[in-house]
Length: 490
Image 1: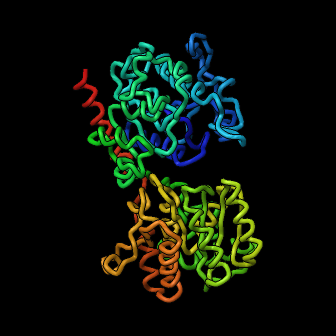
Image 2: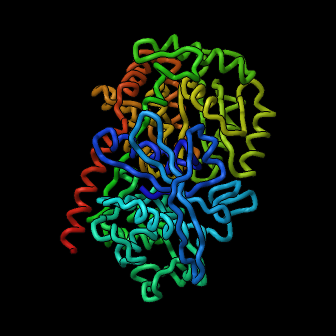
Image 3: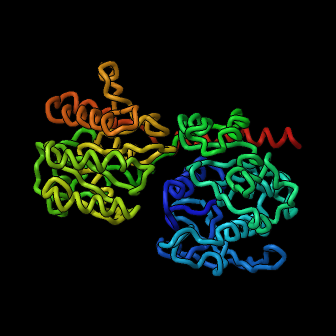
């Protein structure tokens, strides 16, 4: 695994969850898994021993030699080995991709260096690699290196390559003047391979050169082949559609399980959820300074305050609801300044109807999932999503927009699905304030007036299995296909 982030060492989003959890599940199934990532400043905050190895080397970066060394850590209770490429000039920074003022201007140089250094590190380790699995644009040069034999490493001869698209909106698009950082021959800078409207596009590079492609849900795999959701790469993806597989991300139920969650004041399971959630709500209400009103639905939102997450629908709806609809809201997250401002104003007007925390807190995220009655996730687009999966497990039916992994994992509470006892939440299809309001109103009305139906929805959701075991088996199938592709090509 080559990745720019992985829990517990560095995280900005779902990519880190996959890169941290999938190797552990694969290792538990008997595979030898090694993860290679940059040695950021904050990897030491994970509380896991990270030690230097005796491996050091130099990487050619646009005609000059840049030194690096390899660090190593082992995750407790797992055989997975984590290696870190240590180069302070590139990675000893406050952020991973950006700072407050925006993206680091040398990101193309930084991650081109990482790809070349990671490839060389594997060579130094002397590993026989069956699969080189890369994630998103920061590591997408590695399939190109393997396919073109850039660097001439021995492990290229055997390895098949797989790239996972976590979010196609982020592509690593840089000016053509940055191309030299990649080390690739200029003959590959053409519209079929690495060039994109005159620029360098690293995501496109990985999609073109990898043996197999995956993304993080079945529906998203279809969506990104359309002009509406392909972000300009839909043509490339349609051309390689026979090599593209959607695999829904898994949940680490060792961490996200209300029956044993250390963050909760009272744990619960599918048999005791009413009492457990009531006590969790009581204590969260005290903690956040809102009255405990169990007869009102508590609507939870946790995550990035960004356009993608549907806040352009939520804010107008809340302006109406906090004054006129009997419900309480709890919101946790950080993001765009305009949403900070809008939510701050709402909080000042809403009184006891809204508890707002403009921060990130893993502990509070767990407590909100447990205390809330409904979890709202109206994303404009959502490759996979994890919070809706946490919500199912915590007995908090999600209200979601019918996109990507959301529609793949939440079954709408229609009359037909309720009769089949398969309903787990509420799904709206048209991206509008009116459609969201209708769907959320339906959820709240079922909560308030149909307790038996609500019980069925909650308990059906809590019994779903979205574990990494299911996902790992699907990845094994893709790996086998990639190896077969590689063998046929050679």
